[in-house]
Length: 76
Image 1 (spheres, rainbow, N blue to C red):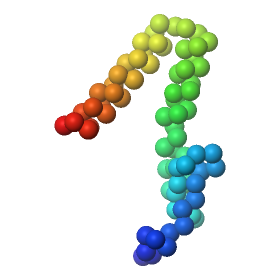
Image 2 (spheres, rainbow, N blue to C red):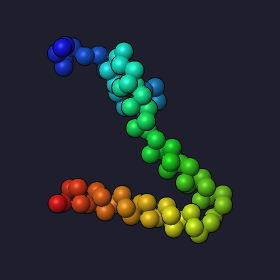
Image 3 (cartoon, rainbow, N blue to C red):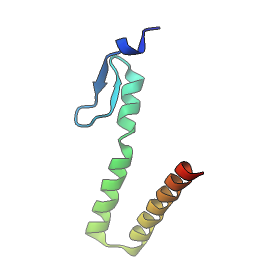
């Protein structure tokens, strides 16, 4: 097993998410870690163009859930 300092890290092209060079599974995980941004942009686009109360309330619920999870994770 190689030393941690000897590992060459490769960033995903337009973000600072890095994975070990040559590691295809790491590359897959690096790209899947960007899915929350895809979901967020999809929600905001849908809310902007449709303005449906159901979608807005659903988005607020997901956002509040994330806030509660963050608070519980860092306080408890």
